Every structure is written in structure tokens, then in C-alpha cells.
Image (cartoon, rainbow, N blue to C red; front, side):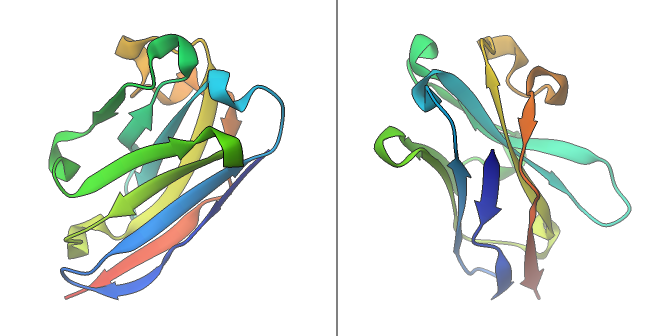
Length: 126
């Protein structure tokens, strides 16, 4: 039900825009998060946007604040992750995930999300 796309190879300081397309009903109700997994490391939280009941509020992990922006287009059933000023440490497989009734305090918790996309590779060269 989720399809992530937009990854690729970019130089240090470059930009990419990831997209997460959702197929299903009532997309606006779902909170959507982006997570990433670097080689040899655990998957970690990047950013999330709440659904309609949460006013579409957003949160970010500290290391990406000011560089990455999450947004959603409910008419297109798509969530975007605009990634600017990319760094080599941003290199990872990026996953999007969706969940209903995810409260604000639980947005960074992977267990709160029932649906996961397949991941898209982002590589930032130095």
C-alpha cells in the first residue's frame, strides 16, 4: 500500500525529494513517518506528519532539522521528504510508514506504524 521513490546518488550539499505514495482509502487520516537505516545500523526515525485528527503537525529528529522537510498532498495520496544540504551521514535506505491514530508522542516509534513501504536508497558522496 506504500511505495517509496526518489532516492539516488547525490554529492555532499545536494538535494533530493523522496515521495511516498499511498494506495487506499482515507489517506488524510493516516500519520506518515520516514525512517532510515544506514549500513550496519538499526533503523531510526527521521520525520513524521500527523493525519487530519492531529492537524498535520510535523516532527523531526534533531540531526535533520532545518535541512529536511516533510509535507503531504492529500489529493495525491502522497507524502514528500524534501532533503536539502545532504551530508554523507544521511546515506541510508529510507522507508516510509503509515499508521492510523498515532498520537504525537508516538510518532517516532516504529511500532506505531502498521504499513511500510519497500525503501529507497539515498547515497551522499563526499
